[in-house]
Image (cartoon, rainbow, N blue to C red):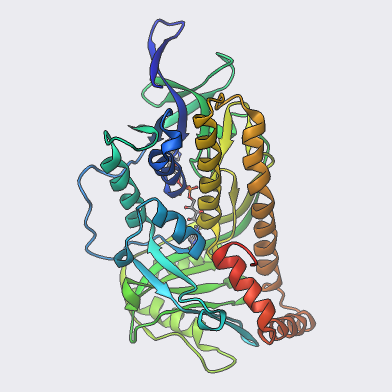
Length: 422
Ligand SMILES: Cc1cc2nc3c(=O)[nH]c(=O)nc-3n(C[C@H](O)[C@H](O)[C@H](O)COP(=O)(O)OP(=O)(O)OC[C@H]3O[C@@H](n4cnc5c(N)ncnc54)[C@H](O)[C@@H]3O)c2cc1C
């Protein structure tokens, strides 16, 4: 229930049961999950973000830069939230991952799946989540009451009132909550100011991102490993007529790739994919659509997901290399699990922020999978950077073995797309 508390300075502080710090894809999905779950109806929730989507629907006349591959498991979760629109997503049926010596193909049909996953533009999916959230406002028979707060968070204080934590906004206002959900991404203020430890390894790499029009349509996700200046991926968007390029490389090359002319970039991109061991290449990129940008890459993990009146989700808890498009999918799985825990707690009248056993259940269910995936992705990245000829042969042998073992490939696909091995 939302109410006002008095502070020592005499100012009134708005008080909530839960405050979600950061309303990116993961934080917004926690809010939407709670808003749709009837069990969560007793909860008042603040959703705080410094850049909330505008009230008026945004129309984008060109493809936007940041995209995510969405696993079938995440697709099911987003669909359940009512925020999935087929017209906003491009399905891919197969995936081809290769280097100069060997390659591996994953094909949905071989695994009795319709697709391996989807590619969505982040801003469009996030806007759809807020649209649903706003449509639910004031409706009966729904879940938690969500209050959007468009403001930057400058501080989170866990030391005052033992039953609440308080968020200090950049304009000096405060709000308090029994539980803070830290969802502000890698630089989470809520995590930084808590007692939770955090390790981060800077890959000294940047991901150059661009959209390119291709000569032919494609429904394949392509990834080519190029040693230390890779991998480079081409992911179909806009029904396959455009590809979103994610090229992880050294900071110096990233600078060059973002600064060069469109023509030079296309030449470099087509060349990067050209050297194929089997003659299979993605459709020729013929035009750069919009601007290019680059983002720093690192791997990170919080030592705990649960602290005093704090729980972490998404990139605030863990960050991985984008080479397998898993980051936000892990975050959505966190969100789904947390919503389940909080809804059950709300419906049974348990103290949301103080029930450590409940929150530790969330951590116990999410941390092993996130740590496992972090390790796997870090290992893949390291193995593909080997440039010693004998190690390269070993890698090629391994890839060849995996590619020739349908059961192993099926297990990889099932785990990556459905989140389990059944
Ligand atoms: C190049 C690249 C490609 C990627 N591709 C994929 C992919 O294909 N598939 C995939 O699953 N993952 C991918 N990822 C990872 C994915 O983008 C992240 O895992 C995901 O965006 C994390 O979502 P989040 O909501 O946890 O955090 P964020 O997206 O970082 O959102 C945090 C939110 O908090 C808000 N915020 C932050 N600080 C404050 C503050 N102080 N006050 C108020 N608000 C604040 C921000 O405005 C933002 O809305 C990729 C990452 C990169 C860099």
